[in-house]
Length: 182
View 1 (tube, rainbow, N blue to C red):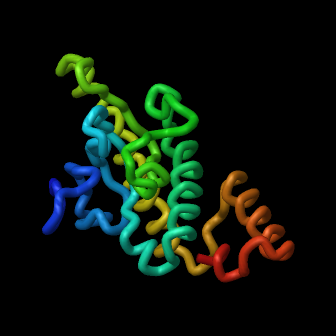
View 2 (cartoon, rainbow, N blue to C red):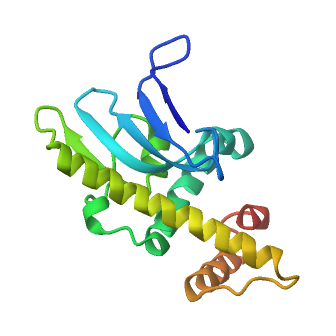
């Protein structure tokens, strides 16, 4: 599914063109998808693997949505095999929209006046779509495990460490237990 927006009623601060796998999402309001984002100053175009934020904001509020977007993005980089080439800056992207920036899992950056040739653009699109395919496959694998077993799926070492860390943080009162459960 391919959708784009320059705004609804008003011009968008960050126009976008998204490519979504209909098996996991049909809207940019939630889920993970590939999206071209134009920075608010018009000087940079980003090709990203990103997350929808609208539903998160409605459910948890702005501050908590930003935290969850960033945590999910950081977590997904490892299982998807995101290389430094596709997350070249520790500070990530700077579109002018904090939610797009926080939710970015992988990206390629193109600056006005120095857009690379079509071969590079296509290679970047294939790489970002490759991360997306891995994400979709991970979701299918997790669903198959859950559907084929009445037992709790086995956690990998990273997931177990993340769960233990969340448990300990909840006991220290950083956030309510319900936050970690969600």
